[in-house]
Image 1 (tube, helix red, strand yellow):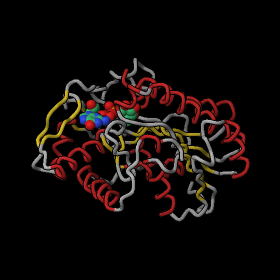
Image 2 (tube, protein in one colour):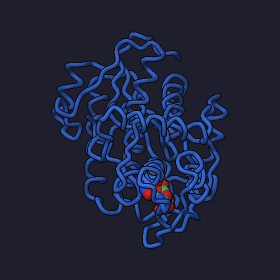
Image 3 (cartoon, rainbow, N blue to C red):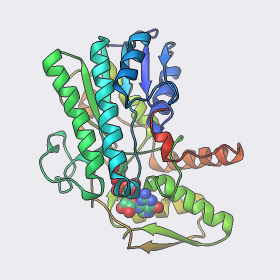
Image 4 (spheres, rainbow, N blue to C red):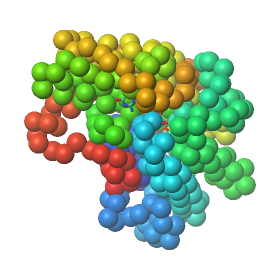
Length: 325
Ligand code: GFB
């Protein structure tokens, strides 16, 4: 069902990569009652603050896309923040949405919460069917709890709360901090820095053999609105391209766009993480949605965004901004 364009729509985490893309998408689609809350106004980990905010603002729809996120290193070195912040944020917002009788809520999982050895491509039923990838098990436990929260609230209270499971994301608004970022923004930054420094050597973490799938965040935002309008089931839905490539090939692609003169050095002391996690996107395709951004174009436009940020002298985001703000 199409959502009325004057509905009150809360984007929890609107400053993050996903939240900013959803806000852009909603504006472009003519939504005129988009609600956001800065970190100063609202600590999403605090249940009483979140309940009061929902009572005061009465959102009809909620995109719950706030959380503490980061790449493989941040996940392994900051486990307490990754599990605590996410467990709390998911719990407070879901409960507040129930108490405020919100019409619908969409929650986002992540492909990294499937079992490490899941059959490829990974279908929705693989969730909880095996042990997790150790580098991000803390984050995964919190995200799995978020999906289960939505299912439990649907079963017990009849709330129309749904979940989507995106693959690795990238795009404008990403975190380019080399310690905490995901691989794609890290590679853009590394190749750019090598160009600036006229130092051709670019270090890639791990062996370069792990396979990853990448979805442009504007495609994800489109899919989230599509699911909000057209899906109302208990099962989470995978969102991806269904295609992956080895990290070495990704690095070569970024090199060809940013600094073709660079050469790659692999630092095998850094973790590879899960060997492969490509999503089976047949359920979403059957519902009638597919992505439109190619990886090549997406990297080019993300690099252009990165250069704009450097030009405008604004600070590129670090992990702290991944928290709702
Ligand atoms: O994107 P990434 O950090 O996350 O790493 P994951 C993907 C792969 O790229 C790993 C390699 O094999 C990394 O070793 N890689 C190569 C690099 N060079 C770099 C680099 O400079 N920076 C980074 N970050 N990686 C995360 C999870 O797993 O995926 C999170 O830890 C989250 O929980 C996210 O869910 C989507 O795909 O391995």
